[in-house]
Length: 422
Ligand code: C6P
Image 1: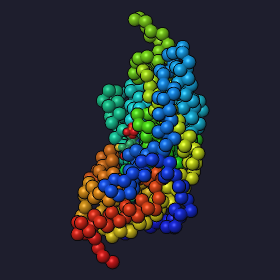
Image 2: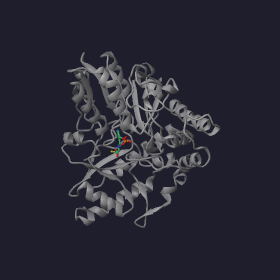
Image 3: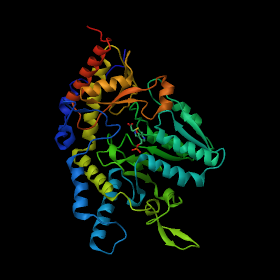
Image 4: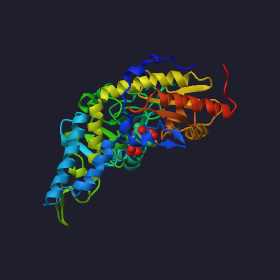
């Protein structure tokens, strides 16, 4: 038996957002079928407003930033700076200078590991991670441990995919320098109590980084309320372009960090004898940044704000409840990850069908999901499985997408001869 479902099946009809028409790609067919795009954890589709904002920048405003005395360069700089302020307001950072543009979550975490970490850590210092982490929030710390002699400590998770909070408390100690935790598990959808965990880490004197890659598009994020020092996310999972992301860093922490990469725009003065560096965020944005990407991300946030993040969250919660009941109720299906607090991620296994085979059959029915370890191999090892099939929701998904998913799972069971008839 799967975990009981708490929300009524009909909840989705009242929370329908009707935004699909804003996303041109959703009108296309795949293998002659209506596209049911349920791989939003990997990347979200883009509304016309974002596509148009990037195109308009190249058509009307393109120039390099911070360099030109000419009007177009100053105009492009103003657009880039405005995007930074849009991000600042979206996550309630205290100051726009706390927003560093990066290529994505991965680069943001590597920046912290190499800039903050190499200076701060000594042999025997401890970095606390959790079993839920994506490889992007594991491997940069392993590299840092090799460089500094620091060691990793890992918070275990329960069978349902929830952190063992007592173990977290026990792992914190005088040697804990950093706690790096995901806000939402990409593989299971578990929402971690990041404010509570941050408060405890602060008592232990640790710096806290939160990986928000799977959170920002699905619930209100307020970095000051969380109290973390760093918060990382990717634009492309927030209806924005690929190749742009954000590192939020608390002003006092960023100010004390050395540069990570050297080049144009991150300096104050350069001579062969001595170079001095710009203040954050410029100190961490060496070279020409992804200007169009930042503007596209700003447009994505404007779009999300216009729909309303609370409405998006409510819609996705209702659809998750519907999907959990519909998919979890299929004989032979086992749900993986049944935490009390989840976002719209449904991981599951179907008896007798490898997730990759399932993913291929679903694709032939126009249903796009992800299959595999989801870049969370230690979590899969903990759960004793090689991977899962994962359907991940976004604001434009509806019951028709879940119906298509259920029908395609039935089809796969028929093909494999594993479908049990009522
Ligand atoms: N997860 C998924 O299908 P980048 O690649 O830098 O945009 O994001 C990396 C990343 C970091 N943390 C979490 C929690 C993530 O989910 C991801 C990306 C995708 O789940 C691709 S593996």
